[in-house]
Every structure is written in C-alpha cells, then in structure tokens.
Amino acid sequence: MENDKEKWIESVFSSMEGSQRAQPSPELFDKISEQCFTPERKLSPFQWKASVAAAAAIIIMNTFAFIQSIDQAKVTNTSPSNTEEQSLISNYNYYE
Image (cartoon, rainbow, N blue to C red; front, side):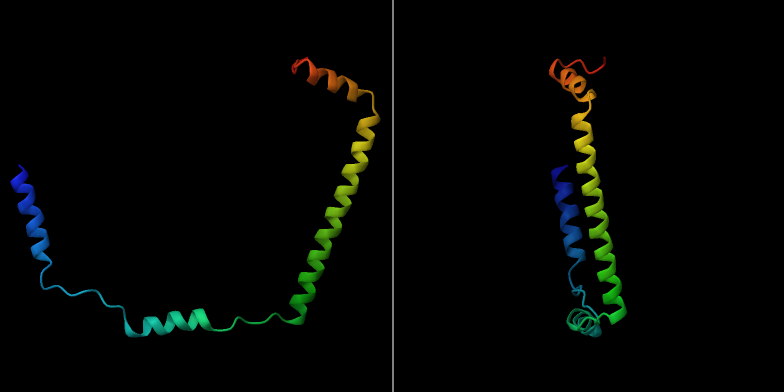
C-alpha cells in the first residue's frame, strides 16, 4: 500500500519534468505600474464644496441630536419614574 502511494507520487513528479514555469505577459507589469504610480485625479471646486457642505450638515445634525439627548436626560432624571427604575435595578426584579 505504501509502495503504491510512493509510486503514484513519483509518477506525478516525473510528469512535471520538462515543463516550463508560467510566465506573465510582458505588458502585465506595465499595466500594474501604470495603475499604481499614476497621480490621482483632483477634485473639482464643486466636489470640494459639496463634501464640505455634507460634513457641516452631519456635524450640525449630530450636535442637535446630542443637545436633545442631554435635554431628554434632564427630563428623565427629574421624573418620579426614575426612582422606580432604580429600585427595579437594585433588587434585580426585571419582570415586575
């Protein structure tokens, strides 16, 4: 059994004798270097303005949401239901 396996492995290796190594096409390296080393295109003034406007809108919306969450936290902390929530957590009766 072991001898058959070794013969098979040897026949596979011997079948590769005389074969040549795979070679890439000559223009492949030129295509790769062209894509890697070409300067990137620059953004137009309209694209710059649009990206700055989008960033400003995101910052304004996040600030508004943050201020609302702070106001909501102030309202929640002054309500009487907050003491009920704390007692629920302190005695671990989550399903009351």
